[in-house]
Length: 86
Image 1 (cartoon, rainbow, N blue to C red):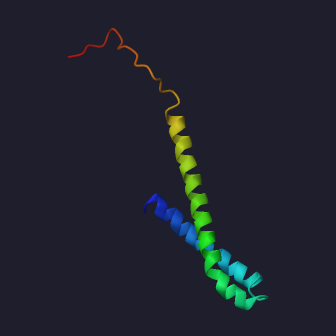
Image 2 (image 1 turned 120 degrees about the vertical axis):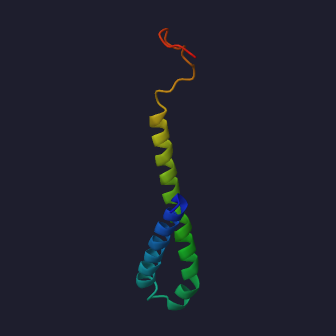
Image 3 (image 1 turned 135 degrees about the vertical axis):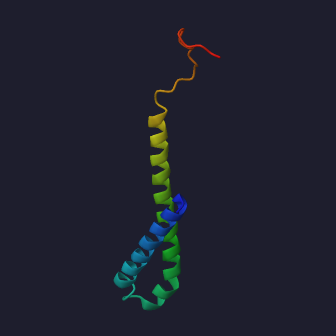
Protein backbone atom coordinates (compact mmCIF):
# COMPACT_ATOMS: atom_id res chain seq x y z
CA UNK A 1 0.00 0.00 0.00
CA UNK A 2 1.40 3.39 -0.93
CA UNK A 3 2.38 5.97 1.62
CA UNK A 4 -0.38 8.36 0.59
CA UNK A 5 -2.97 5.57 0.72
CA UNK A 6 -1.95 4.74 4.29
CA UNK A 7 -2.30 8.36 5.38
CA UNK A 8 -5.60 8.74 3.53
CA UNK A 9 -7.03 5.58 5.11
CA UNK A 10 -5.89 6.58 8.60
CA UNK A 11 -7.31 10.07 8.22
CA UNK A 12 -10.57 8.66 6.82
CA UNK A 13 -11.03 6.47 9.89
CA UNK A 14 -10.15 9.31 12.27
CA UNK A 15 -12.51 11.68 10.41
CA UNK A 16 -15.40 9.25 10.73
CA UNK A 17 -14.68 8.95 14.46
CA UNK A 18 -14.51 12.74 14.87
CA UNK A 19 -17.81 13.23 13.02
CA UNK A 20 -19.40 10.51 15.17
CA UNK A 21 -18.22 12.19 18.38
CA UNK A 22 -19.24 15.62 17.10
CA UNK A 23 -22.65 14.29 16.12
CA UNK A 24 -23.31 12.90 19.58
CA UNK A 25 -22.13 15.93 21.50
CA UNK A 26 -23.46 18.82 19.43
CA UNK A 27 -25.84 17.02 17.10
CA UNK A 28 -28.44 16.24 19.71
CA UNK A 29 -28.95 19.91 20.51
CA UNK A 30 -29.20 21.22 16.96
CA UNK A 31 -30.49 18.35 14.85
CA UNK A 32 -31.50 20.20 11.66
CA UNK A 33 -28.30 22.21 11.35
CA UNK A 34 -26.24 19.12 12.10
CA UNK A 35 -27.58 17.32 9.04
CA UNK A 36 -26.51 20.18 6.79
CA UNK A 37 -23.10 20.73 8.37
CA UNK A 38 -22.05 17.09 8.84
CA UNK A 39 -20.55 16.62 5.32
CA UNK A 40 -18.55 19.83 5.67
CA UNK A 41 -17.17 18.74 9.04
CA UNK A 42 -16.20 15.38 7.56
CA UNK A 43 -14.41 16.91 4.56
CA UNK A 44 -12.62 19.47 6.74
CA UNK A 45 -11.51 16.82 9.24
CA UNK A 46 -10.37 14.43 6.50
CA UNK A 47 -8.41 17.16 4.71
CA UNK A 48 -6.75 18.40 7.90
CA UNK A 49 -5.83 14.92 9.11
CA UNK A 50 -4.49 13.83 5.72
CA UNK A 51 -2.33 16.95 5.53
CA UNK A 52 -1.12 16.53 9.11
CA UNK A 53 -0.27 12.86 8.76
CA UNK A 54 1.31 13.36 5.35
CA UNK A 55 3.51 16.21 6.51
CA UNK A 56 4.55 14.24 9.56
CA UNK A 57 5.60 11.34 7.33
CA UNK A 58 7.38 13.71 4.94
CA UNK A 59 9.29 15.35 7.81
CA UNK A 60 10.28 11.92 9.12
CA UNK A 61 11.59 10.91 5.68
CA UNK A 62 13.58 14.14 5.33
CA UNK A 63 15.04 13.71 8.80
CA UNK A 64 16.15 10.17 7.93
CA UNK A 65 17.68 11.33 4.67
CA UNK A 66 19.61 14.05 6.48
CA UNK A 67 20.97 11.51 8.98
CA UNK A 68 22.11 9.18 6.19
CA UNK A 69 23.85 11.93 4.22
CA UNK A 70 25.37 13.69 7.20
CA UNK A 71 28.92 12.43 6.56
CA UNK A 72 28.83 12.86 2.80
CA UNK A 73 31.01 15.73 1.63
CA UNK A 74 30.82 17.80 -1.52
CA UNK A 75 34.36 17.08 -2.70
CA UNK A 76 35.66 13.82 -4.09
CA UNK A 77 38.77 12.60 -2.36
CA UNK A 78 41.56 11.01 -4.41
CA UNK A 79 42.03 7.26 -4.41
CA UNK A 80 44.53 5.82 -1.97
CA UNK A 81 47.97 5.10 -3.49
CA UNK A 82 47.66 1.34 -3.05
CA UNK A 83 44.51 1.13 -5.23
CA UNK A 84 45.01 0.32 -8.90
CA UNK A 85 42.57 1.20 -11.65
CA UNK A 86 42.44 -1.42 -14.41
